[in-house]
Image (tube, rainbow, N blue to C red; front, side, top):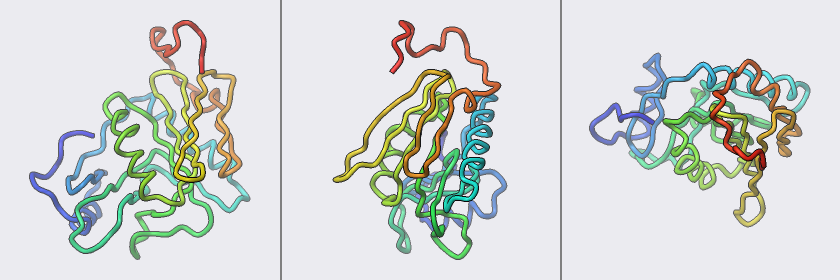
Amino acid sequence: MGLPQTASKISFDDYLAYEREEEARHEYFDGMIYAMAWESLEHSTISANLIGILHGQLKGKPCRALSPNMKVLSGEYFPGQTRGLFSYPDATVVCGEPKFHDERRDVLINPTVIVEVLSPGTELFDRGEKFQRYRQHLDTLQDFVLVSSLYPLVELYQRQPHGFWLYSAVAELDASVVLPSIACHLPLLELYDRVEFPTHSNPFPLGDGL
């Protein structure tokens, strides 16, 4: 997240009124509005590949993939509320009937899967506070996926009973990550199609993988 666009905190309602008039996208975090970070070619390519993979595998199923233009609310709404998160995940999957914050139907509140493509400027927030809000407020969320844009690495958090999350990761291009909640898989070779990585960007220099 970049610098806030406002000097003082504003409410959920004020943010939505502002955002619905703007052409650019902004995220909202505890009363402050932040312009969305720029996308590298690698980030944009991975995001496009991701939507294509999910769309193809979800045909005929009771779930659908949503583009990065769909906002997700992580927080409890009441008039004047300022603590909460409105985010734009790189991909969202909702199963069954989508539920929305209001009649505008542009803020989803019942995602099943959320995928974030990581960038250097946003990775800490995506891994930390953003995931904490997702865990805390999105009871329907079953799978949370982090996709590196610097090297082949996909990390999966699966919801378990009693508030636990099971972690796994794949770092081989010939492998796939299975998303049990929607019966889909993400082949890394397809996810990273046309993505070129610097030779020094291997996160496992000894070749051990995960």
